Image 1 (tube, rainbow, N blue to C red):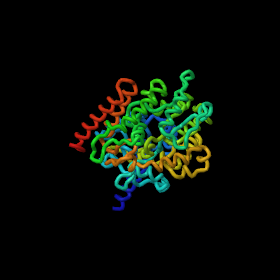
Image 2 (cartoon, one colour; image 1 turned 135 degrees about the vertical axis):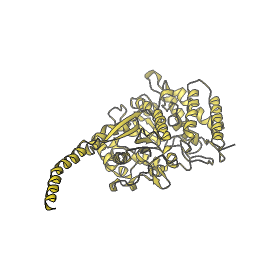
Image 3 (tube, one colour; image 1 turned 180 degrees about the vertical axis):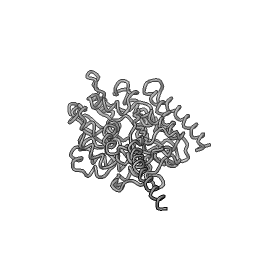
Image 4 (cartoon, helix red, strand yellow; image 1 turned 90 degrees about the horizontal axis):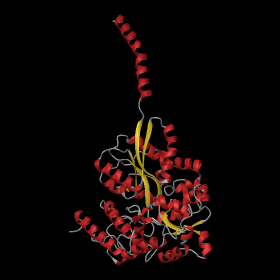
Length: 446
């Protein structure tokens, strides 16, 4: 027995180095986990892509693969992927519209087990609530925004104009007329004209609210042919056709950001996230020439400024959920805010998500609009955005699954009126008919 034990021990001892080598080799040669990320082609997300090499260096077991898309295309791709469960993406850039709806459908993995230093309590309340369903957080906010009015204070001074503390759309139309300078290529106003529920309808949705209109009455009957809708859409079309830039139907957020930053717009009503790029970016030619005011109102302030949250969510179909969550937590952390501040300056950090950002003296100094933006985000009430009662929540969108297609069809009809292919009346009759069809198919009405 003793002899056999010695032999066995010798044999085991001989194998031990090989075993260790096998373990070592297996560990060293294990392929990194790949996280496929679908995101939008806006400046903040492109910056994240550039800085993500810091994450990969610190986490060599994770490799990031990016798919960067235009906003409308992104929405189509991620919706198709998650609805079919194809698992093409491990991390998706989605917003406050998709998060609660997809969570209810069971399509998203909850963001549980976050690192202790993530400090979830630091997230701005309205932002955290916008991504929460059934008491669980289903997406991590990268940046959040409301809407506001940007204007060229140098041009206002030249024309002897003064922006009111709370402008109306009547004020804006008067200013746009006086600021339009076709000889020098300056449009009186720039607005989103590209069709899409998250493009032109983001602005039109707030105009509909402040003009006293609503998408549906309390019994889900469509209301798109109402006088209030006509007033809102007529004002929008008139503003852009009379005082907007050429080719306005092709302009979304990115195109208008370029126009305003290059000095081609007297005013621009759009996302608060643009403030950092206008005030601080090296590409901006209007630094020091810009002031801001709230989004204009008409008959009610309700729903006059939107709330949107670009965030990172993990589809349940992902096979790399742990790695995806680790990156999402890093990209939405205080650590990432500090990294952007170091690399690009405080004025360009992702805004709208964390109270600690707005408490930072460095951010307050770099972003004179910071308190205004924080108030706009905190006061955007998704549960009370219309003058008349409605059965839905949301400001610039209606939080029902059918809205994604309905909003886009209505956006296309209004873009057609803007392009002169139809009238506002015809666009709204088409929209009303489509809304009626969609609501009957969805059995909201009979």
